[in-house]
Picture 1 (cartoon, rainbow, N blue to C red):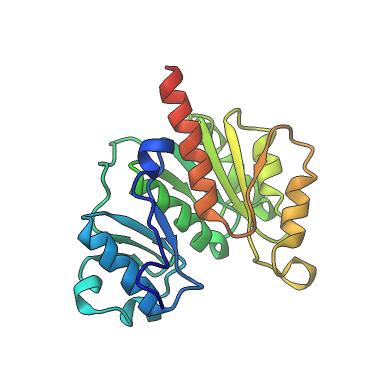
Picture 2 (cartoon, rainbow, N blue to C red):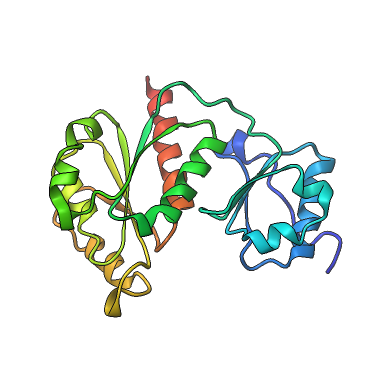
Length: 223
């Protein structure tokens, strides 16, 4: 591996209002180590996504002790986030089932790293639609709602007909048979008759959080 086969984007936040993140699932531990060496030299904080416990444990101790690792979402913060969390949440994150929580937590952690608090509502899928209906008035208070669902991914469509805020849907790879892999969920959301739903790629909680950040930043600029 060459010394400079990576170039962390230390100016991303100043350009687009979203801090740098490193996708780790296709990187070897020694590559991640090199990236963290560079970040440490620049006194730069990083969000690491898709970093497993095994990859964390393979890193040198000097890096492990600086990591805030969440094994549920397979995310880690290297160093401290540059922005403090507010007291109140700006984004609601909703899952159809508990199997969708790892993807939702990736969104939560990405938002927190960028200084945005989330309000989490889990396991309110349409198989027991009364659970969702009990929370609708609560969800109406948020200008952005991230909806995470696998199988037939009906949750974002139902929310799209009930909640006025921006709906960012994340299909997950949860399910049996044709639902496995998330393509059924993705196609279902793309075909939704609820108007104006934004759709992320399969299992892309990070992308959903970044879409929410762009919306929140634009709200702030127009206020």
